[in-house]
Image (cartoon, rainbow, N blue to C red; front, side, top):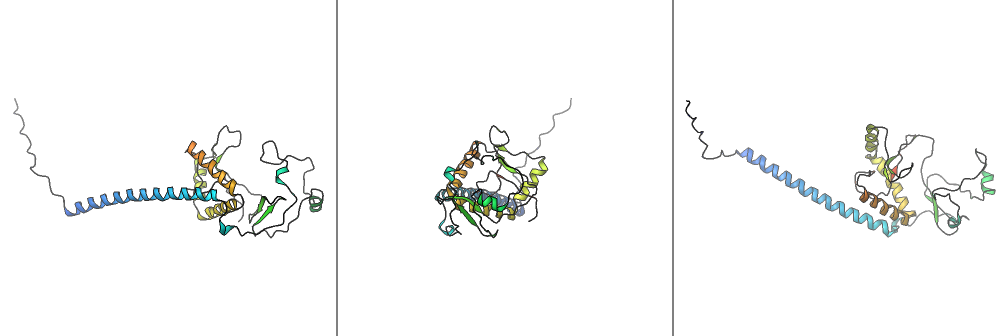
Length: 240
């Protein structure tokens, strides 16, 4: 029979860590504590920013933005205008397709011709002093565009994210929206929307916030928390 092995003698004390190990441990603790404080501070400022944006959306037009270019009122009345059954567009009118002469539009259709320079911001008013349209510096053209965001059209039974052809396309679109140029365009449209349709602006924001609360997976357009009540965006791929 083999004798039982002798028990291993345990050390009477733990080895004292070196100065470098102690310093590294302290730096690790400080870094973790610093990240925790930064996360709390970031969340605090984010909540304050959300609250400020909500208050701003319901206050209406800021005083600094009330001085805008005005135009004469037209004879159009928005309250008596005919719309389609969906309420989104006007009813279809029978007629031949093709370009219509300017004289026919002004005289027969009783429209008003306005010589716009294509640069200045100009609201269009009806005979009740209600803004029905706004002329902006927005380029027009026949070029493709891809929607990104959420939608309720196309026969959907509930709001959902717009599907892309591949994950690479979604990654590309998300990367484009991270550029400052796209965010500046969104800010421009956002300010014009708030100035000329402040009540609709606040209604959009309330609906969008309710949708995010109902389904947190609905895609947001921008990573930061600035107020932009836009459900989807169509980045175009035409000339600047």
